[in-house]
Image (tube, rainbow, N blue to C red; front, side, top):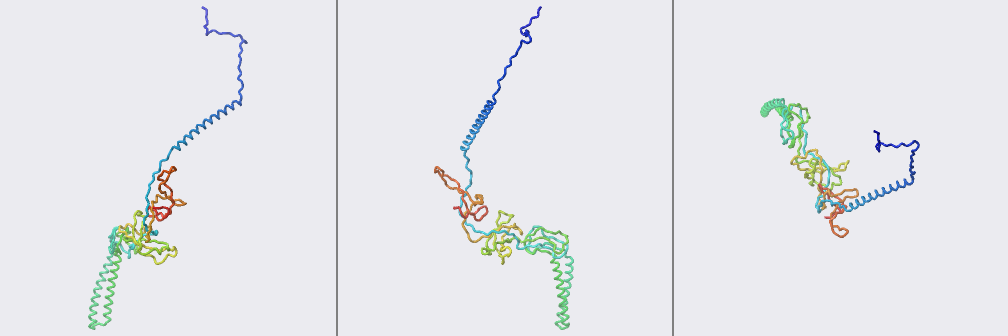
Length: 368
C-alpha cells in the first residue's frame, strides 16, 4: 500500500535561488507637518477647556446674583430720657470704726478661753483669763492689811481728837492706811490686766492662742472689729472740694459683691490737701447690718452730686467703639429706589456720658 499525502501534508520544493522576496519601503515623514498637527491639537484642547471653565464661571456668577442673603435678626430698644444724678467716682478701702488686735498685757499662763473664733462679742465680755492664783493670794493679804490699817486709823483719829496722841502718830496711821489701799488697788489692777475683756462690741477673728499656753507680754490673742456701721476712705482731686459736703450721699460697691450696692453718706472731709498728690481725703459711713463688708476690702465709690440732668440711656451692647468715634445703629423708615418704604438701619455717631450699670448715657447725637 502506497503512502498518500493529504493536501495539508503536501509540500512544494523550490530550487535554491529561485525564491525572491520583495521588500516595501515606508516613505519618510515630514517633521514640520507633525509639529503643526500637534500644536493645532493643543490649541483646540486649550480652547475647549477655556470655554468649559468660562461656562462654569458664568453659571456661578448667575447663581450668586440670584442668591439673596437672609436678613439679620436684631433686637431694638426704644430710648427715652432719664433723670440721673451726676457722680464723682473714686476708689478706696473699707475700714472699721474700731478695730484692735487684742494681746496679752502681762506674761502668764493662759487658763481660760471663753470665746469661739468668728463669734460676736459684746462690750465687757470676758474673752481670756490668765492664771492669777498668786495675785489673788496677794490681794487677800493686802485686804487684811488694809482692814488692820483702817482700824488703827480709826483709833488714832479718836485719840488724836482727845489729844491723847500727837498729831504725828495720827499722820503715821493715815499713811499706813493709804499704803494699804494702794496695795489692794495695785494687786487688783494686776488681776484685771490678766483678765482680757472685749473693749467694745464687734466681731472676733480667728484666735491665735490655746489654753495652757504661756503668753509673753504683747503676744496676739484675737482680732476684734466693729463692722456696723463701717467706714469707706477715699481720695478725690482738690478741684472737687467745692462739690463735697458732709451728709452727701455715696454709693459703694465692693469687689466681693459686684452685684450689690451699699448706700451711705460722707461723714468727714480732711482739713488739709495732701501736698504730694493734691488730693483731699474723704470718709463716708455706710450701713453694714449683715457684716459682709470687712476691713481692708477694696471698694468703688460714687459721690452723688445734687444737680440732676436728663440723659438718654442706651444698652452698652448697642454701642460700637472705634478710634474715629463711637456710634450705634438707628432704626428708621427708609425708601428703596422704587420709592417703597421699609424699615432700615443707619449708623449714627454719638457722644457718650456716664455709665450706670450696663447702661451708657448719650449726650449728643440721639433723640428720644
